[in-house]
Amino acid sequence: MALPLVDQTQFPDPSAIKLCSENLWFPVTADGEMERTHKEEIAASRVAIPATTSNSHPIAVWADAIKKARKKIERDLKKRQRPYCSRIGTQGVITRWPIQAV
Image: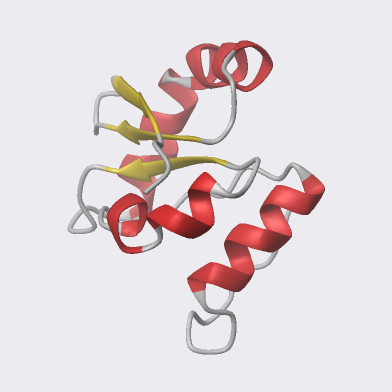
């Protein structure tokens, strides 16, 4: 099921993190600071959040990158302990790291 894009002012990050954690949804964000800005909320959740390495490329670039990284993303979702964040580069390369409690 595809979820609609929402205006962040109407659905702030902490609420999105909680909702995604409760439903085991996999949010993708262009907010490269989310893992720092919302570290406590992420650490208290069961969410896996990939972030793009920048927000200056068109959405088509990120769609291609996510397609290239699909198998790695699916493997991570099955095998990695949550919570965690990762970065997806424009070529589909993934950098992963766990979130440590504050």
